[in-house]
Length: 307
Image (cartoon, rainbow, N blue to C red; front, side, top):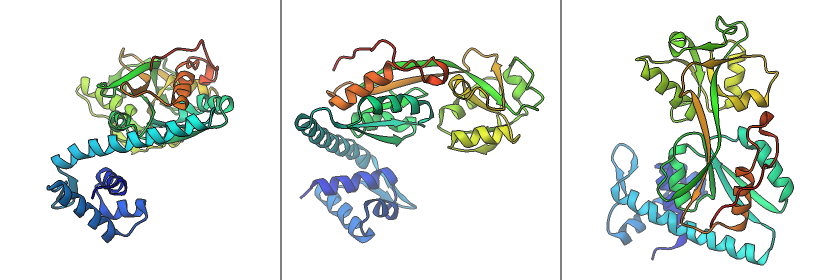
């Protein structure tokens, strides 16, 4: 008979599409996990995975994954609601983002104001956010690129310019602005495919029939900045990064293109009543003064949200 353990194990295998890694994450033996998946498929009367060259979800598996995630999300939401009802002023809020550099000050302020609320942070690519929100696996997301909006609500936190960052001795360092064509042969230090900075770079170059010359890909924003400073290449960075580290030894150059911008948005599920902890964090993040120096200016007038 299908049970919660079976569903939780299936969701991990579906996410990783790899039995041994899923077994490691779940801390169970791989043969035991294989038997669990086989029992689930037998109960449903159909395979959930293709097992050719590698393990992959098939269409039935994709369909069932959505139901399993939503079922587990509902149960977790109920558990947290009961905990909040019996322990006033506490609770847990789960926040996902592509990275958390822009969120350190708002999160620190929230923790000071609500010390009994536990914060769980999860780094997610933007393409996974909508599904995880609808499944109630997370409460809130902060994204720097469009996320499919069906069933979601959002508020724009910040719309800002994105600059080219170069070493101080670079040939363009003294320029006040550059065109995309000026960057055609430059080596770029940037994020991996799927991240907003990389998508912006690829899109702006493609508009001019160009392909950026990538010399380094990294998921670490701090490492990208250091590699640029060290002279390994140039890169795109949002204005908030300049304001948060005004003395950092690199040159910031405006890009002469109207779409060289980043929009930071806060998203949540429209169909579920959020727990108190999630409501408090949603208000705190949306009301933060994102345009202050370093994004550290504290709360503006609080924004009210419906449930």
